Length: 122
Image (cartoon, rainbow, N blue to C red; front, side):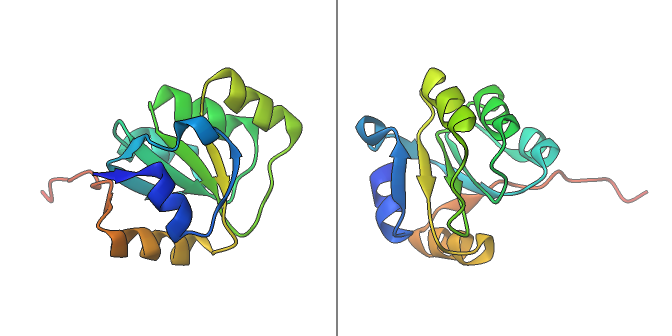
């Protein structure tokens, strides 16, 4: 079982919000900037890594029952996004790694990606 605190350490992440929630379990990870992909492919206790810093990210994370959001490339969300996350008890982290590098580091830890949908090839 991998905890959010371990993820933060591996990513050299700064915890913006949710220090008291760093014991949350991370089951899988999803790296995406399209929130429709997040809604389609994630499952409960998924960690979202994204370069988007708008409030829609927080709304999507709440709808998908995600465990936390990591903003990549050192991007810091605005006060409105941080407040929305605070209102929803959603931990926020920031890493300087790119989306590709951050996902690779999590894969090295043994965190699985979200499985893609399987389509029938008729």
